[in-house]
Image (cartoon, rainbow, N blue to C red; front, side):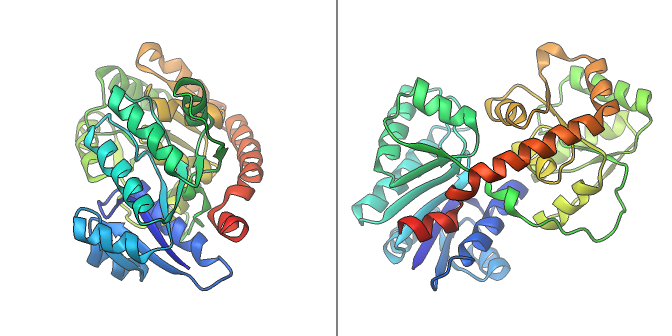
Length: 338
């Protein structure tokens, strides 16, 4: 069997690389011989890192050749179908889905996150693409609710945990034991959040460490460095980074996969933001959200003081989610349905 993995791969984004690493690992557990092809922006790097067949995701000839090569195309997690950054994302990914159907390939939308779409044409494109897919699963309950209740998609939408959850944390030492990790996206460090973090460190006297999940996040680190006593942890290997976060007492994050890594490591967290996917995920695993409208230092300080309670809640919730996900893991889907 030849499986193609489509996603935002090869762009130095830790979350997307975690998805890719986990998907390759899950697919290799499939009991029949399997060949894995990846559509990526960095073919040479991806090939060397994962030992897979590669196709450039931006070259039409590569897309056609790759789709023609594969038996099944898996849209491998993430928020691929979104128009927040650009409506061109919708045309690209729905176009790839249409190409797959032209070549009569099976299509799986796997562990997808769906935010509210801004444009009418985006909603039309998404509904059509979902109807083309042989199987659709979402990574959070909010995405399923959006598809079913708002977009009125007539399809069986299943739940499966984000692929990054199935990485195995690699813990080399206890260097970051007792730390509080922080991830803030570039351009999202408001004055309210900055004051919140300054007050938090003054009140708790904790060791803070900034973790960029994308090179662009460094802009936030340089701002924080001027106001806080904060170190930085730059780690490209997702398994090692997850192992580092596992040592920490607490996490304060913005990027979706910073929250996923924290939850997977069973490190309690607070989400700073009010985006659909961050809010939806935080509520799903029963952790605290602090949006722009309720920036209160006591919420963050109390969450840290009650971190053991939040950790226990997180662990129990994650255990239930793992059980619910088992039937939809990609290996099980391949065995049962293909």
